[in-house]
Image 1 (cartoon, rainbow, N blue to C red):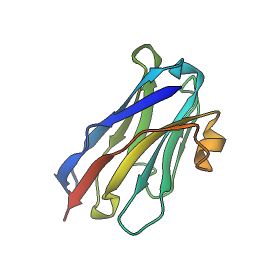
Image 2: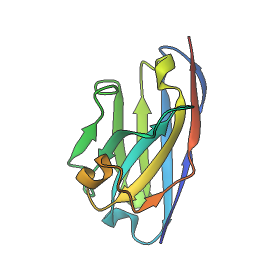
Image 3: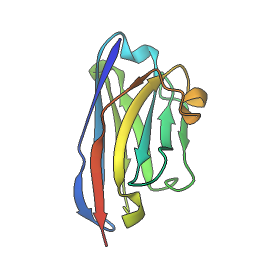
Length: 123
């Protein structure tokens, strides 16, 4: 079992930056690929980004490519999402997930999910 807890969300203005963290506990987190998803009110959950076990492979949704950066620190059992040049359309609850690969995570097939952290971007 892996427990995931997100932090770092908040209210910012358009153009600002935020860094989200996802701290893992339980089974060996470094054995899992990790990813970030988001869900805005009234919308389906959507893939944002994923990173492989080693960190050597990353994947991004087109809507965030060039603005967001995913990284991980396996020694700290933590995955990060650096979000720059935030836009109002980035407003959502952001959740992290752990899964077998970046491919399965991109298909939203995560094995473990966190509860999420709210990100609100004002115009």
